Length: 335
Image (cartoon, rainbow, N blue to C red; front, side, top):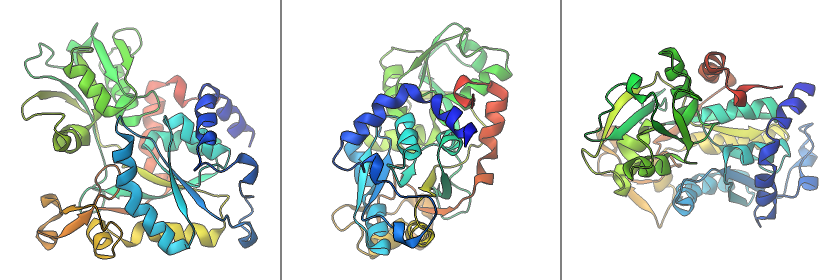
C-alpha cells in the first residue's frame, strides 16, 4: 500500500480533474465508496463507468451506451457514464473508489494498477480473431511533407496526445530513443490532449508530425470525414501494443465483478444489436468482420469501434512495462 500511496502522489497534478468528476451528477461521493473486502453486503446501489473523451465526448459516450445497457441488464444496477477529461482524472477517481468500471489505454492501466485496486478483465477485439485488439502507434505527416523518416523529426514541432498514452506518446518516445533522439530536447513536443486533436493540429500546420493510435488514421477519423483519402502519410509504425482494457474496481463484491465481466464478454457488436441493446443507433457490420456478419446490423461497441471484447489479465500488458524500462519516463515512475 505504501508503494501505491507514493504513486498516487505522482498524480497529484490531476486532482482538479478528480474534483470536476466529483461535481458531476454521475459521480459517486468518495465517502460512499465500497469497502474492498468483497462482502456481498457491500454491493452498491448503482455503478459508475468512466471514459476519457476525444473532442466529441457525446459521440464517445454514445458508443458505450450499449455496453452500459448490457451491464445494467446483467447486474440489475443503474449504470452511469462519466466522461472524465483526462486519463489521470480517471485513475485518481479509481484510486478514490469513485469509478467502478473504466476503459482507457494500456499505459493508463499500468499507472492505475500502481495506485488503485483495479483488475483488467477484458480488452477490445477489432475483428472476430483473437488478439485483434492490438494497436500500433503511427507517426503521420501531411501528404507532401519533407519529413520522410523518424530521423527527420529532429528539431520539429511534434504533436502527441497525453503523457500517459501508450499509443499517443510513450511508444513513440521509445521509438525516438531507439534511434538516438531525446523526446524532450531533440524535438519540440506538443501535447494536444487527444488523438483526433493531434491529427487536426498537424493538418492545420500547428505541428509537423503527429503520433497517434493507428486506428484513428485507418478507421475512426476517415469515417468521421476528418481525414480524406491521401491526406496523410505514415512515416513510422510501432510494434504491437496491447488493446484497450476494461478495468473493474476490486472493491466491488466478487459476484458483482463476475456479472460485469460476463456482460462485457457475452456479446459482440452484432449480437448486442440482436439483443436490443442499441435500438436507435445501429450500423452495418464492418467488412473486416467476415462473411458471417455481412449485411447484419451492429451496435457501436465502445470507443474503438470494436467487434467484441476478449478476456484479459495483468500479464497481457507486459509490453507497457518494457516501454517504461526503455523510456524511463517520469510518468512511469512510482516514487
